[in-house]
Image 1 (cartoon, rainbow, N blue to C red):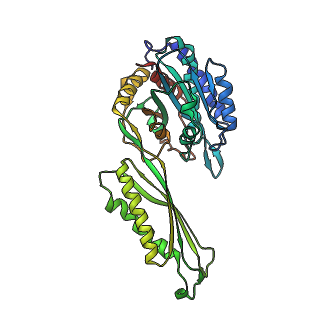
Image 2: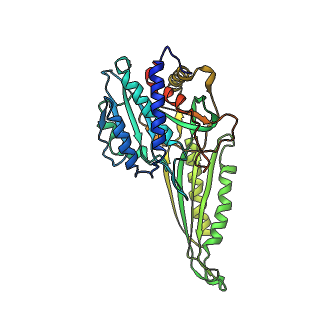
Length: 381
């Protein structure tokens, strides 16, 4: 599948085989964000077999390794390492186990051809992508000041179950959304339901607010700009006969365009405060900006396209519409020119379950594509 003029075929097959072995083990030890201690220990144990320097990240989990080839520039590769919390416990339902294993395969290949590499390589095994906190935490702990050389560019991959295994999505421009989360507390006056005139019922205010917020996307956003402003939870009341004191509403805002995001944030705040006032409630609204959009620049797109073609051939390169899901790989892109690939993980002809679905799985042949894509991103000039 890959370009044998670029790759040593025997070594690449060896790297893919090893990646699959790592995958079998990593899949069995899913761990929560910032608690990936067994995962980190395993990654460190594997990487210590290779001629890389382990960088002190200042954090309890996650791993960063530097392969020094004596080159003037460094290319970074990043993967995520945490699992998805579910009602049945922690599970790798987003494919981070496959991402880590792909990176270990790339470590094996690149370390064995280090004399021929055009750059140094920084391998970033990042904790806590679920919830989009990990990249910012690593940067806040000064990772870019702890490494021998600041990367000139950074590449990442994420599986895509809607795309057939064997295909690579190389997309120019916004790929995944900017995200903010919000928490709105409406405060009324509790009392017996038989005396509504003595109460201030925050549930009524919450119902009105939920309906009003639906107008943000339909009336305040350019219809050609994809956007979401939605509630994901509403909590109010414990009694069948009394009005509660508070109603708590949580949700998120997502968009590809930053100005659109700012406009939705402004409208949400205004609607919450004005609706609360109209129903004689107090209002506490907290909006937390989580991550910017993943945006693949034209310059990085050209590099990535060349690398992906070398890895899988032009016939397996495709494009798709972006996703309003979010990925904190975007945070690395605020510091370093970045590119995120989607690597097809769906079994052809099958109705493949999406990310976080209990039936989610990655096709067994995934490593045959993901390892060459990561490797080619370093080798291709």
